[in-house]
Length: 275
Figure 1 (cartoon, rainbow, N blue to C red):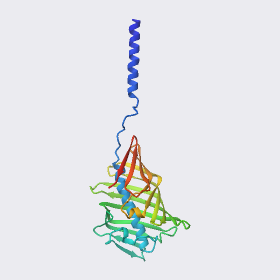
Figure 2 (cartoon, one colour):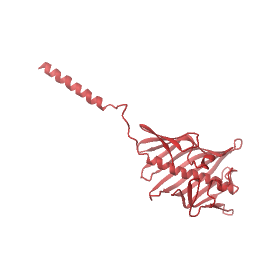
Figure 3 (spheres, rainbow, N blue to C red):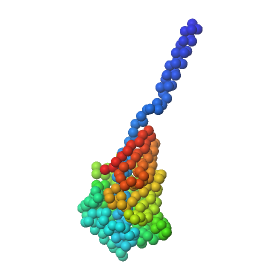
Figure 4 (spheres, rainbow, N blue to C red):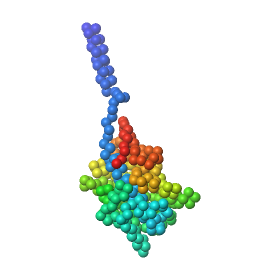
């Protein structure tokens, strides 16, 4: 009886150890890739916003209110875009009509800039609004405000506070997404045009209905030469997206003017080349 009881005890302990061992995490277990559609959609939204930033600087310069850029107003845009400057009301309107394409980007509708003074003057601001404006089929709505918060004359670097409020994107399938951003952009001139170093945060709701927050963890670098060659994403820097209880990091690289980036998520890494 004692031997039988002892055997049953050992058998129970052995079975328990098997169960506990099987519940331990296998280091080789592959974690499923989370839904990255939100992050991939954000690439397209950010592309539209960087295009808008380039358009703003070009429009202000063409009106004698900004940097002296290497390209003329239409250098990075389509030749049929029309700029109207109403000096008494301090309003600049860029009209793309029913649609025109340059550098692989198709724009239509109007972008309206209402300014207080030259973007080079500390304290001045530019408020951007839209009328039926689309970039590559994405309809953009909301208000974007740029405020000059300081200038470094020695390095000819301007610090701009950039806010997007009530931002809304209507996608080609009719779905919508919303976003707000609060950024600081340090813009300087280089031998090849302007360069912008961007920090800040954002939040929104994807077209799939997922809410998220975003934070730039390493400054995003955007250059005029890359933008006007058709590369509409940062060429350096990192941003974290937080949603559905996970953090996804997007790494834009080390400064190369390309469309390659790396997405790191819990359990894996994915390399992406944007269209």
